[in-house]
Length: 236
Ligand SMILES: NC(=O)c1ccc[n+]([C@@H]2O[C@H](COP(=O)([O-])OP(=O)(O)OC[C@H]3O[C@@H](n4cnc5c(N)ncnc54)[C@H](OP(=O)(O)O)[C@@H]3O)[C@@H](O)[C@H]2O)c1
Image (cartoon, rainbow, N blue to C red; front, top):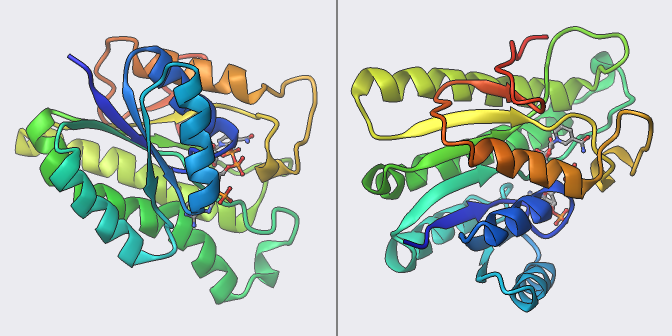
């Protein structure tokens, strides 16, 4: 049976490669993107590779687009079996936390936490019917003098709690749902100004390892899984 997955932020970077890998594994991919032209372009590119891809407008800063996307899924893609919350913004990664305004922080929280939470919440009825899975792409948020982007870490800390807390809720309520997170590790993308280095992955490598974990046949409910496939303490 063909299954459907929605990937947010699928028009570039890691999200596009996750979409490609899931498509190669036989999934129909809903390309969530806020820019119609780039979303359609990605869907066309994947279709040329033999992947069934459909563009879906989602701007995580715009609740109306989230609600409209949830409606479209309910009416046309009620067989959706997976949501991958991939889209995110870093905010200013260099500025010390004490220099952030609340509005700057709110904007990053909106894209990286409130938007994904709203999308997840709205898709739960469909995912519950399909025994679906929710995958959050994330980062470690423990204290570090080396990696200390305030807004980005704050927002992903909230996302990590969502993963663990909803995982418990689903289990305790006996719901046929699974939520878990994957930390791909440093990857060269626009998000980090296309930084490179010894430990940096390409987006192709990150997409492959993420799809590999998703398709490993294990139940990861409530877990945060590291790029090496090990369950991680998300606080480190
Ligand atoms: N790169 C790394 O080293 C690294 C490491 C660990 C985890 N991650 C995680 O991997 C995920 C993908 O990041 P990436 O590195 O691939 O970044 P990226 O290349 O900058 O891609 C980010 C994606 O998110 C989308 N996006 C941004 N704001 C949005 C909004 N308001 N609504 C909908 N989509 C929005 C972007 O769309 P536009 O093209 O329209 O901006 C783009 O498609 C993120 O969750 C990130 O935290 C990345």
